[in-house]
Length: 313
Length: 307
Ligand SMILES: Nc1ncnc2c1ncn2[C@@H]1O[C@H](COP(=O)(O)OP(=O)(O)OP(=O)(O)O)[C@@H](O)[C@H]1O
Ligand SMILES: [Mg+2]
Image (cartoon, rainbow over all chains, first blue to last red; front, side, top):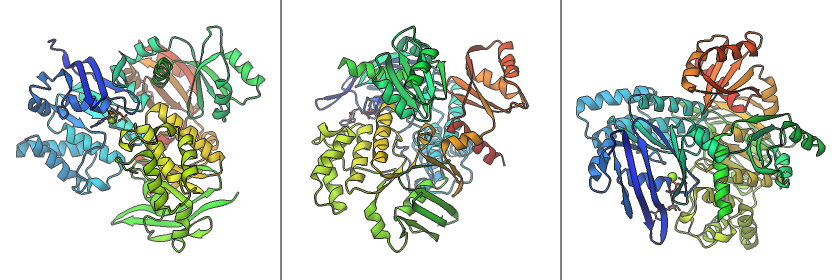
């Protein structure tokens, strides 16, 4: 197998009873890459991750993670990866430092190494005044940084992060991504899921999973080009809900989404431009501040993909 | 405007941490009121004190004119609380979960209300499904239905959309907008600034106190800087270069775009454009944008931590 490949997945499938959570999933992740795994709730992201890190046995298919087969060599897989679960799986009744020591022990670090890595972790996660606080009492952002540093203690070559920024404030999210970029600079491969699609922009490549199946893959810019082939307009208004109600009934609008006070629409005709939309809104006496033609965001891509899928059902 | 929540000088400490620190705040009737702030600011503690789960150390508050300490039980009947860690009974069906919460709240006649709620949440077809077999988005909707079964007048929602996918998140907000139209007052906390933007008023909480509280459009009007959005690559290179230009006050990366915050008195739009163009960057789009609450939130935080 190619040396540049860090994770190789072929035909991975997981059934729970008669329900197929993950169906014939194949993809590869290059070394040192940030790979974003996106999909709606229940799409099968966590289930896939749990198979890749060797804690859930696939029904069929296989994967090679960091050079080891997840079926034949589970123990080696577990040793070479770091994993941060969606629930941050910390021991809530242990302090931050005790959690680090505990995880270091699991990974079999010797005493000196453990000490080094724990001080590295405390530093990197900015936890120095929180060392003795119970994990259960830490606020979201700190919990998350603690969980991340636990996952990185043994210097894994590959880390799996399942919704690592869920419930974390905007500043902590930015700091978190700075940390992620710096570990990939050192050659670590990052496999990450998120529901914050602006974060997906930081990924080198993406895969969308829907109902257990991969529906599309590519770089963020390729996905935008391939999924959204038309123009996207952003309209700013104090009353986005009214705009949406109105656009919903309009035949020239294909797709509508809303982000704060900004409404994105994708018209279904080439000739529609800013003037047309502003004329239309004025005609209906709808308030708006500004219309721009914009580059589609990954959120637009996500909404479009899910919509296409729902229409096909 | 009628005040439904009034908080005066409220404090709640855990050992040496002042989670809520001499806080004053008011919420008006029928409004959607949003609490934002960094992790650990005290949002959840405040909500839990208001819901009567934690006892305050000092100060007072009232809800519907009822005293927060003395009339705790009366208040409880009129509020719905969706906690951050709200858990449904995974081994019960949707219907059974709702019945359970109806019993907890002593609601005898709830069959009709249940049907109405399930339909409102768009999960009426799944009544017999076990809660653990629901997707994350549907679970949140069911949880919301459970907190509404006793027809509360005010709802406390603590990060209700965390972990919910973008499509379900939108649907959840459509439901909230309907509840508000029906006259339910909503107090919500969220880490998503685009959600804060859709609320009537937004309070920014920091270190246990409210730093500022206002209507989103006023918060933005007060913000006297300009923001330029630049879609470009390689983004980190552009970021590093722009950081060397001192006249630009703050730079943030949002995925594939940079937001440059600047004061027009110090540097003009044209000058910034020239800086961008004269280097070998790929620039796909440059435009001025109105500040979002996220921009303002980050600026505020940077100031605080810089102090
Ligand atoms: N142990 C299990 N037994 C039965 N069904 C399961 C089990 N684990 C997961 N599932 C089901 O498999 C599907 C995929 O779940 P999974 O947790 O992988 O989704 P996800 O993409 O991670 O969603 P989210 O964004 O909500 O985290 C869901 O329908 C879930 O209910
Ligand atoms: Mg998951």
